[in-house]
Image (cartoon, rainbow, N blue to C red; front, side, top):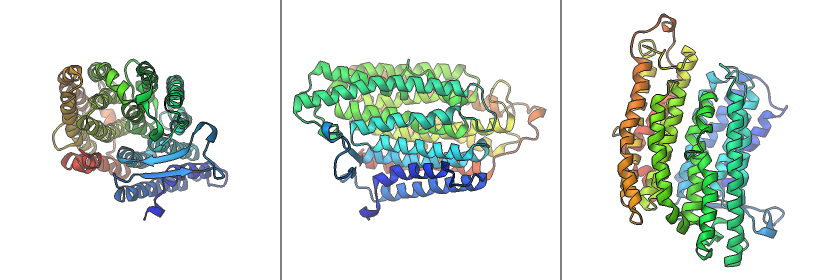
Length: 494
């Protein structure tokens, strides 16, 4: 079976289809483009599930691409190599699933430029998959930068439904923040590559060839800080977060689902792959300080989320708060914390996709996302209301749903961080997150769905079959992983 399972096919299949889709060879018919694209995303998800079924954590998938029998840039030891270990396998499957959901959500949210939209969606998917599977530092950076191109067009494009005049400025802000962070990150990668050669005599950029233990401590710390700045923009870590609320709010609903569900996880994965795994000694030094930043993420943005009135901005700020939990799990530097961090990436992706989907449906029907003027729509949209209640309850950590497992494990992991008492204090102070998230999520649910129904909303329709499929799939994931967490934890060794 292994001969049919290929990481390059997994990564580059969407890229090839993207080029074909945008070319003059493919029809401009809206229905054909949409159905073809959904079929491609569906096939990719099935292929990913097949790889997941045959995946052996003790024997990860590894593939290398040679160019005329040579490495990519042989003179400096850069190899086009890909590896799927337990964590990257989970995130790859999550990526494929979220993009499939986004393709279904696009039916009513994208009305024009279908060829360009779906081609950019597939290009973004290839870039993210490249990040999660790269086995070489420079290959990682290549895909990290490639991601900017489709993300810019998807956030700032004109797609024909309630176009936001601020979308283009939000896209530019996202690109500038990410690009500037990437330059600092590139400096860290270059220093790591250089000092690994100086200290170990190994001219290679492959992760498995990096031995940081022989690099001087102050150089390790400098490299680790440079990398954290780059990844901190994408995670995001306060104060590098200001691009996120605007991008999430002004992007179309399917793009917001991808940004919050997957794109933020690339920052957390970068911290894991570089700082946590490759520069472990430096990360142990920096982790207590980073844990304080995680606490600020958790508490501060929860208060900011409560002050918002736009549904999408509430969800955007809640994402920053929840990514603080992911960062806290990594800072624990133990198996429980790492398992909690990866588990919460999955749980948060499902929750935030559901919440953005709900916000998008409300806006499509009511042309309004302000909870101060929304009221009583549960009467005319009972099915949406049912999904909203359950997903909101899941988001605040009610037992039987996936976020409950990851939140508890994160606290336990931080309390078991033997190398620093700061982690224990942060864990205790982070507990109010459960209360704060309940406040802003229940506020959104109460003001938006309860109360007297205005006349302008009396003829609003409930969710369609496409929207039902998306929300039901998300809810199924939240319940399955909440009741059977070992499906993920077992792969992580936890």
